[in-house]
Length: 137
Ligand SMILES: [Fe+2]
Image (cartoon, rainbow, N blue to C red; front, side, top):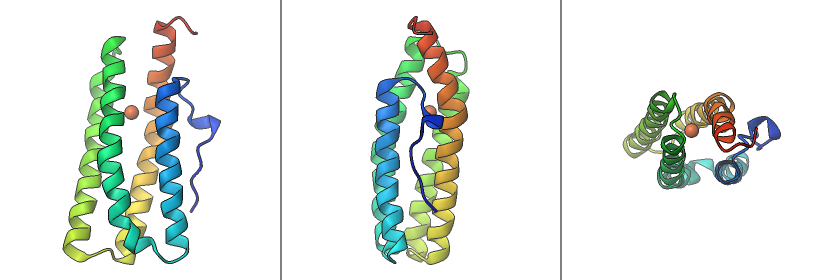
């Protein structure tokens, strides 16, 4: 499994794209650790990174949506809430069962699926609207 930020994921809003790249680059490092058999040790670290980084990233997106009166802001923020819940529940599972291989695989699949899907659909839609409001489209 590899993860790479590509133009397909671009929202066109520079600050948002920069933060997405940061998330992807941090996640890629983690996947590198998984490949060399060190994924289990790194699982709590990546979850801690996601909890803190994504928190401020989501807050920034939500502020942006308010600024431009984005019509789908509520649904978008609900998706963010679901991701937070996912990360926290994975963290609880690791605390309870330890970083097992099946938990590691499951976490990678669910986190990456969510990120790619959310960015491709919801963040790109938001980016289009924001750029339109900014007179960039
Ligand atoms: Fe988002």
